[in-house]
Length: 157
Image 1 (cartoon, rainbow, N blue to C red):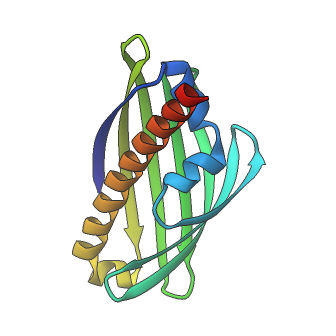
Image 2 (image 1 turned 30 degrees about the vertical axis):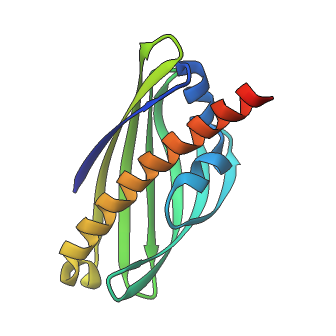
């Protein structure tokens, strides 16, 4: 399943880039993320994800790896894990491209490619697709809100 979102934020590319590498702040923007641990800064992380998909409560331990990055231009992250209780495995490839739209304004192009497999995943494919689209949309909205909030705080300081 592929999903795309575009976010325009009132910060420079450098500020948006710095935000992407602040694992705790970025994780707080991801709906269902209940924790993140940095294993190797800029390379590997462990995240905990809990949410509800239809009638099912899912809980994933995700291994997160930065597969590729080009400073202030692009980052590609792969996250994978499984809910052993429900027998669901998931893998997501997330790419974020950063583009300056004007001085002090950046467009983030977010592309997510999600694969969910397992018995429950097969039965609830429509619910999973709807939930995944909602998570990507909310992640994008939360990142935009967080970056706008940090700009507002700096201007009042």
